[in-house]
Amino acid sequence: MALQDILKKIIDEAGVEIKKIEADLEEKKAKLVANSANIEKAELESLDTKTKNALESVETKTRSMARQENSKELLRTKQVLINDALDSFLVMLEGLDDKMYGQLLEKLFESSRATSGKVFAPPKRLEITSRIAPPGFDVVAKNDITGGFVLVTGASEIDNSFRNLVFSEFREALTSYFAEQLKLV
Image (tube, rainbow, N blue to C red; front, side, top):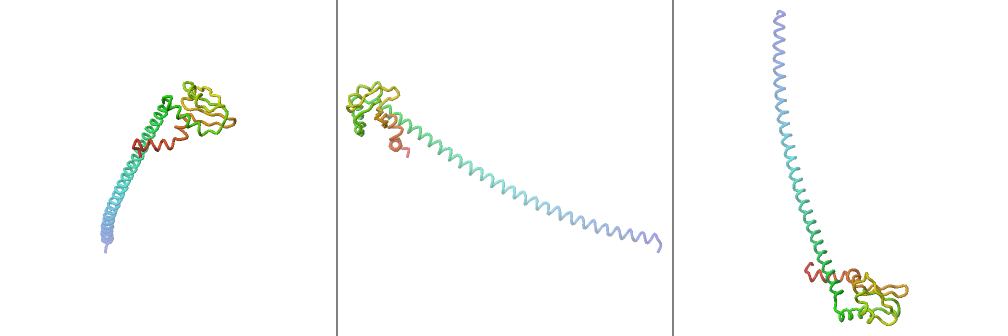
């Protein structure tokens, strides 16, 4: 065998090996492409699932927040209605005719056990308050009182002003009453 024959045989064998390697590479490439497509498909499905879950979560949170805001607004509206009712009630008390106003003052003075001191009353109701106040009390006009009175005896003070009675002392009871009357509960 000549050198050329040997070289030709080596080249032919190398060509066969190269074709095997190329075929093997094509097979591996096809597997990689298929695996890549499967991985891409799985990732897209996972992304779709995550997107759907995120959208559902956003929708749920949005609905929940809307319900909370509606509830808050409803409570604010109810509170405004009750405050308006309390304001109207205060105005009604302050505008009572002299007879009803006097009867109300008598009830308020009944709870006092004091025998002397000062009674601060609204200037426009000074005369009726002076008539109803127990003996031994000085009745003095005070501009910031619009109805009722403030009784000062020694070291104690009893605030029977209508504003205090409506917005502090009896607020809870009046709020419950007005909420029921206005059908807010």
